[in-house]
Length: 340
Ligand code: KG4
Ligand code: ZN
Image (spheres, rainbow, N blue to C red):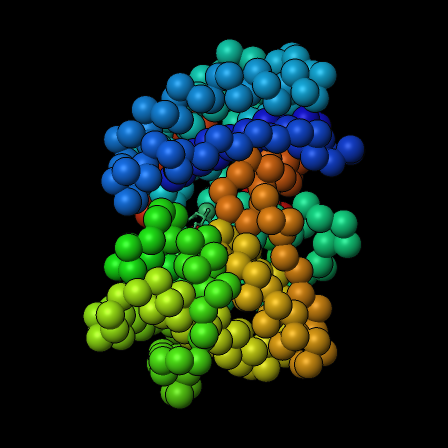
């Protein structure tokens, strides 16, 4: 079975082809960073307009590089939520129309399930069950993954997501967009221990996160300096360390509480090198295996959607004729393909 995957939930257009026998055949990502950079964040209307322009040429390109034609497709998977409504509609309309014209099934995929599956695209993928730390621009969640589609949310952010905190903090420091990679770059030459940063909610029980207080603390700290380049480097480094330590402490706690011995880390923030290093060290210490996506599949991409879609389509799941795009869609509402 060859599945075309389409991702358009936010500011990346991703397309990919996944073969259930041969694995990933090819993928293409178009990032809208340049389009939104002047505004310091994603402008939803511009995102939708760009997705619809990119989808056909990107699909042609991925078919060409994989030496395939439309008639070879056996199904289409697209991100149907959560995300920006207009952006989701662009992908859903394209995917549903193409599936209709080719008379093949289409399936809407939960964006975070896509992220969660991304490490399964690598060699030596994890077995189920595992603990997943999902860290993206819109979500920060610790999830007990019993099997594909059977998820228990153990903890999540009660305010800003980790990626969102990176983005907003970068903006406050006068750094570029998206903020995660910018903060990480500035942090490289910074002294993370010059200022004291809180590690929110780590001193009380539970697995929920909160990053908005840390964000305010970072602003206050930065405002108290002369705002030199060195101050920016040091504040960026301190902030990054506080976020990473907080994520690490809660993840270790979740591993201890669940007794799970496998950790999957995914979503845009999982590209953060400091976090990858610290989680590697922590998991080694507690004797558990850790799985990351390759760097290009940490952020949004079509490969993870094609892969998740292939699994659901193979189990016989497909959409009805009307399509659903759900800007809000709790992960816990999903069902395992085997239970459908
Ligand atoms: O998964 P993703 O591409 O989109 C959503 O589903 O939200 O995640 C994007 C987020 C942004 O907030 C971005 O700043 C953050 O991931 N990010 C990073 C890094 N690279 C991307 N955060 C920290 N360090 C990075 N290296
Ligand atoms: Zn994402």
